[in-house]
Image 1 (cartoon, rainbow, N blue to C red):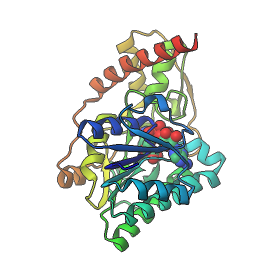
Image 2 (image 1 turned 60 degrees about the horizontal axis):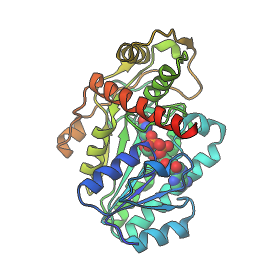
Image 3 (image 1 turned 180 degrees about the vertical axis):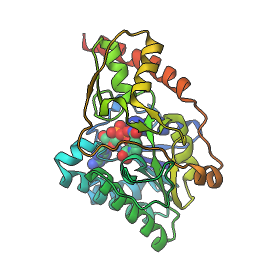
Image 4 (image 1 turned 90 degrees about the vertical axis):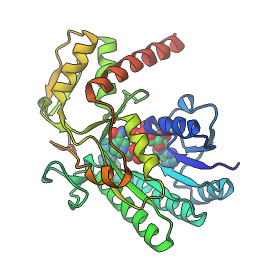
Length: 314
Ligand SMILES: NC(=O)c1ccc[n+]([C@@H]2O[C@H](COP(=O)([O-])OP(=O)(O)OC[C@H]3O[C@@H](n4cnc5c(N)ncnc54)[C@H](O)[C@@H]3O)[C@@H](O)[C@H]2O)c1
């Protein structure tokens, strides 16, 4: 099974969009995913799918050596902050050991790797905003710690193997196909509540802010990063509070629902906004989708997805 590009986590939210974009560019794509959080139904038919756990080093290495890709995009992860607090050992296994396995295998076939780290869970509440890549991370959760540790392996392997691996620290990504069933993905969660007429719980009483970035802008950045060693924040440089986000979705949908307000959950941070000037300078990339447009696109795509999955269930 040969491929020009491998996407680990390609059956997940961001990975499935990246797969589509790579196929559009004429790449032959191999998806590696254990389907623990992803769905085979959102993997483009033109991509190949290998269901395997990246913690299984031998199976992963064999798949990458057989494919001999020109680029590897490593998105597979235990991506839930709450799950990382409940089971930090599993989080470490997937996010650190799994990443070491992927970067080692990519380096062996001279394929540059792009690793998706987090700009939200990494920097901590003490960071000045917008936060630059220079700020020393102070993660609040095992998830943030595991991403930081994994980044170190990616950068170390880049230096020691000479294969140019890159790290992208993503803001809060939103868009079609995001699952409304995790604890992140607030746009998908709110959209699902509106769809079913239920009041959402808004943690931190609606005041926490995040740097929300539309998924197609992230995909463009990941592709631009391939072969460019370095660590790049990928967001918009803007922050929006959760209550404003809810109000905008309620306006788009016309919903008349009063949300419930609650305290922040363990491991969650109060504010986040990324300095994206390094990526803008070095990758000739910039985010193009305004949040109002991105929310409208996401809301209507998700409503269609929810209706389609309800029809299948009936
Ligand atoms: N969504 C965001 O806002 C955001 C923000 C910052 C960073 N990230 C990072 O971006 C990447 C993609 O995130 P997403 O939102 O698409 O998450 P997602 O959960 O939709 O996708 C992750 C994919 O990885 C797969 N996976 C999990 N463990 C695996 C394992 N052991 N072996 C093989 N596959 C495995 C899952 O099945 C899933 O398809 C993750 O690395 C995440 O940490 C996401």
